Picture 1 (cartoon, rainbow, N blue to C red):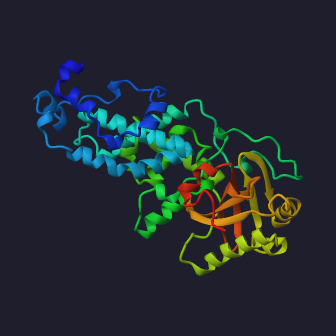
Picture 2: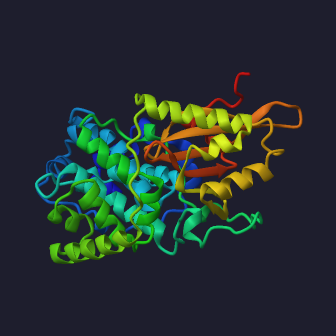
Picture 3: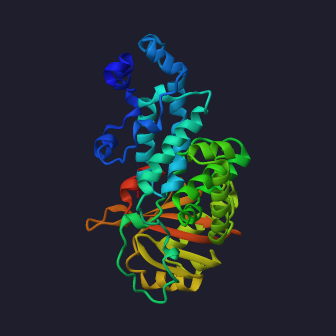
Length: 381
């Protein structure tokens, strides 16, 4: 096959260097469940195929228009894969594999049959469905059972149990207010966790249709199904999602003076161990969870009691504002090491409602990711 394609074989070996992350490709390249090449058929009559057969591929100006159109899709693909997989590392790996497959199979792209975005999302969907085969459902602490009635934390669960936070900077910039509202809502931790209740193909069709705005025909093409089957899957997905849809929250706005004051007050009350003041900043139905522990608390009184009991452990902790993640404000929590140096301890994501803190997800042990959220390894004193 390689000899038959001639110049194309050489072109395939010259995948642009910016496409390949050597660390991810080396670490994961042998672990992918690769689909047979026949799933990306060589399409007679396509411009790239004709150039291959005519032996003109190397003479074509580079990068081609198709190649140039691939890289801008990396951001949207990251958001798509993250919503399906619920994990940042897996989403990045899926996007990397998608881009590699797209470059390797450019000769099989026919613009008369599908737009480039549709074609690439087809590859990404196959990659994600492969990864989800046999995977457990990712969740947040409140998905594992009722709120705790005591201070027994329990045994931490493995990373594969949890929906992971993702920095907003990983997603493409959106200027349109309506599109920005959809993006913020559809990357909320609670929404991504709700998506995990859906079977993988239903999850994909719902994100394609209701979040990314693909048409019924395009979604059916991406999923290799009929329009009727795709629409049926979408209706079932919507019904299931309605049962797990998260409560609405305030739209985060870094320029909102009221929200900035609320976050400052929360930081000040936490660092001063002023439990009464902190309780006054919480919504009546507030909940607090701490992945990787399934234990969680509900209500200001329970959270206040836990803070009082743990006052000694948090005595010298500091909170620093970080960059937004999942459409929410973040705080980096630092704790002194044995030498008294403040080290990353946890990342807090806060959801706000009615000028109160309505949800706090404290991701323990993710200090190696602090840079993603604009947080320093060691804060200035």
